[in-house]
Image (cartoon, rainbow, N blue to C red):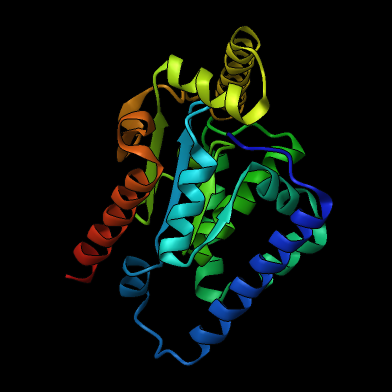
Length: 241
């Protein structure tokens, strides 16, 4: 469950993101340029996580990020980047020219079809997610990332759990009685689904749009994270061949 983050916590997360982008750009300066087709094929991977409320989506994402040493963007950090002009500018400026061309191509394709609605916020959100994918080596939680980032360089994951387990998780996290926790779950899932259906014309519950579907109650946070990391390594190995 994504919890509220203080302004100080959000600032720290943004600073970590800046450091990650800067490190990636400085490392890229020392690499021998590849032909464009090969470079795109070997573009850095990312993970996009869609989750049911109470299925420990952020906890799994943070464990994946820790194991891979990747930056994690929950919905609050993603929205902060999307809404802050200065942050967005720094993000876009830290992409090399070749990946900027890919970003513009993907962005134009996204808005060339009736998949993404036009409000300015959604426009910025999609551009932000595509820019983060251009950087790669990140885990993005929620906000339709698994629907927008549908290319071969993103591992798309859906996290689910039985209702009883999710109610228990919310009761523990929020200190709520079961009935209030159940209502909060229902309302949150409805809001998530409505956002994705309205802006991206997709149903997050349709499982064939994901590469992995994991039951966090059956496997637990650590094992789900391990399976996702193994999925990333498997994609990296396939691409390197």
